[in-house]
Amino acid sequence: MSADAPRLGIGIIGAGRVGAVLGAALRAEGHAITGAYAVSDVSRERAAELLPGVPLLDVPAIVERSELLLLAVPDDQLGPLAAGIAATGLVPGGQLVVHTSGRYGTEVLAPLAEAGCATLAIHPAMTFTGTRDDLPRLFGCPMAITASELFAPIAAALVVELGGEGFVLPEGDRALYHAALAHGANHLVVLVDQAREALARIGIEEPGHLLRPLLEAALDNALRHGSAALTGPVVRGDAGTVASHLGALDDLDATALPGDPADTSATYRALARAALDRSGLPSLTEQRIRALLEDPDTEDA
Image: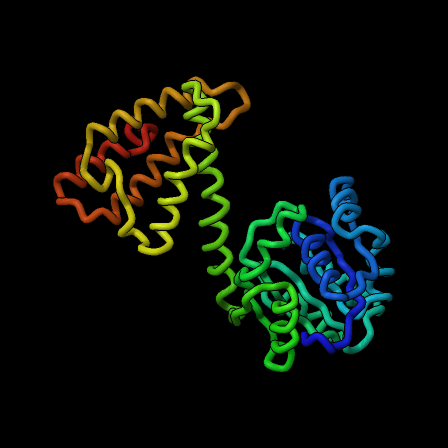
């Protein structure tokens, strides 16, 4: 929205990692935060830190006093929340309702649209910690917009105020879009955690420090070049090295403490098979490595 656009009264329903941060960013642009809904102690503390002075209210109170509702709740809660708000009969015609789910477009907000609300979906392609560290990460952050042609300019203006770079994402593409982001970011965290644990097990005091230059270079190359950035023993056809890795990782998992994950070898096998599919190795070399990577449980069956 332009500098002379009217400021809105915005209610935050879901003061989690995303809602509280986006609320703080919009507040910095001059909008008034009319209230926040926070259930857990952690969310209440987060609201106090990022949205000081904002009252913690129940959902009906926030709906009644807000021109824009920001729904930042888990995906599975979004549909029931939208239907529940619509059923109260409290929403006035013309109220803006924005959700931040990556999975859904605006169809999930259909009950509110039928009640006369302008419905928008804005998803920042970013991981959130729920702290002030997230605020500068919004600048230049891609944000997926799903909205009708009539309301898309409003969504685009909100994205600009958040500091993001908006792009239009059709409703039907949301599931694959969100799967791609979750697979790339969430599963990357698991992979790095496994590498950190393996290094810590051999006495490396700061495994993150050791891994950072390598992983940053690998990520940068992968983002630039895709599978052409693959290196390592699988794409070189070094079957002996792959066998050595599997033995070490099997031992790592076998000696994990009770209650700790013991899944590094299985993850290595799955990702190494995916790397092998992209390797272009000669057939005999590929077959030799693929045999090594078979699931041990399958071999024993």
